[in-house]
Amino acid sequence: MSAVLKTRGISVRFGGVHALSDVDLEVPEGKLVGLIGPNGAGKTTFVDAISGFVRYSGAVELDGEDVGGLPPHARARRGLSRTWQSTELFDDLTVSENLAVAARRPSVWEVAKELFGESGSGGDALDRALDLVELGWAADLRPEDLSQGQRKLVGVARAIVMEPRLLCLDEPAAGLDTGESEELGRQLRALANRGHSMLLIDHDMGFVLSVCDRIYVLEFGKMIASGPPDAVRKDQKVITAYLGSAAAELAT
Image (cartoon, rainbow, N blue to C red):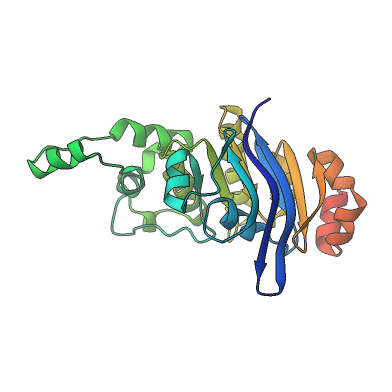
């Protein structure tokens, strides 16, 4: 199976601190891959690196092409899309309009048409993205009318509308209660089953283990384990890294 994303030897230093050290990771076509680790393990730094927001050494390949020399916006146009830990939405716009802002990539011809009073709708793509996360009913609502879990799904739909090759989800379950996390997990699993390639980063281990096809585990910037969820759940290095309540969760 071909890899949508492949990283080799990704390392990041902040002064004398090694935030990441030689991290190798792959996301196969149409798979949901999880990246977990204790707080401070380097999970978000990894996403920042592959999406072009921090300097790194190593190689990042998207569909077999090295994107290391590209800035963030160019990587996004190549199909490497991401969400952020804080789901910042425009509360004065409708849900559909929030997606339209993200989807806007006007050509010179489209800009010229808009100057003369013509505009393309792009409505079909917006509707499809909302339908994928089962939020079509909320298209004309404002984000302030939605629950926190639904706002997170709007953030996912906003990334989907860009038609990415890979969607990186940074802590999407942060701030959600148990029911909202379960619903988010169900939606992400459904997207993966439809062939969307995703990298899921989250500290909620039960959430990640329950929905992902494969798991990678970081500790202090180094990869300590990888494999299918059942194998990672029983890995002694992983259990040691998550001593306490999370370790008990792993054992169940």
